[in-house]
Image (cartoon, rainbow, N blue to C red; front, side, top):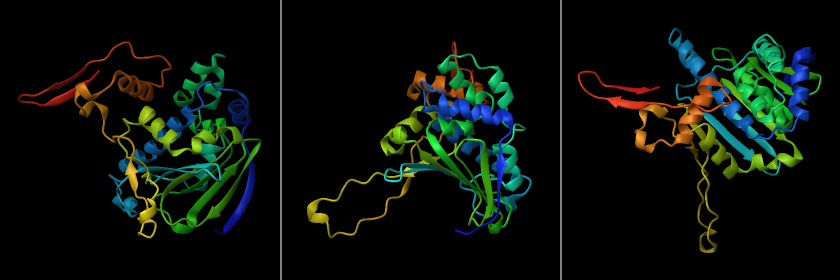
Amino acid sequence: MSETNQESLSFQTEVKQLLHLMIHSLYSNKEIFLRELVSNASDACDKLRFQALKDDSLLADGADFRVRISADKEANTLTIEDNGIGMNREDVINNLGTIAKSGTADFLQNLTGDEKKDSQLIGQFGVGFYSSFIVADKVDVYSRKAGTEANEGVHWSSEGEGEFTLADIELPSRGTKLVLHLKADQSEFADTWRLRNLVKKYSDHIAVPVQMLEEKPAAAENEEDAEVDAPQWENVNSAKALWTRPRSEVKDEEYQELYHHLSHDFGDAVSWSHNKVEGKLDYTSLL
């Protein structure tokens, strides 16, 4: 994969402070990084869906939005990929390297010293991407903005220290792919069953399908010569808005996680009301 126009850039001071915090603070709830990255990927799909209402040519690569998660135990890597709006070189610098879009300063000013509460602030101030460095010692981002040519892709890479590198790269389709090179003591996040459970726990309500390769049992001895089909991508989350599901099927924990997702509040919702009304007008409400 050839790269051109390579350069190294420094993070802004506030981002350096944030990265140092992510890398060296022992958050009691490390798994929240996956919630944040899946949420970001879902947002990228929503942004493209909205922009395509005015320009449907942006959907040249297809309109079936999805987020895909895969892991490589041997390499100790975790990959999260979406086919949403994507980013060009300028977007990557603005979104991943500077304070302009990250909300980093507000995040730092609101730290409480309580690990649990501080980890919940990550989503509230839009610094979810940087939570990658809670579990990874290097992150690669490959992205191509919808509506651009294949040779306008960009590769961002950083080890979470003072700088990041950028290079132009050819990518076959739009969207963003994150490759997390996990720390040696964070290999649990390269386990597919662990990842599936986290998706169900934190991202079941997200309307965009979150997919992983299906788990196939090892072939029996008498089937060793049989042709084994390649595993297919399958939905891990319900990919269905929580309020459209029957109230009897929704657990209290799911209502609370939806509240956290929408509000970025680190506390629980006090109460909720979920109703379906049928008559001259049919509607569902979730308050």
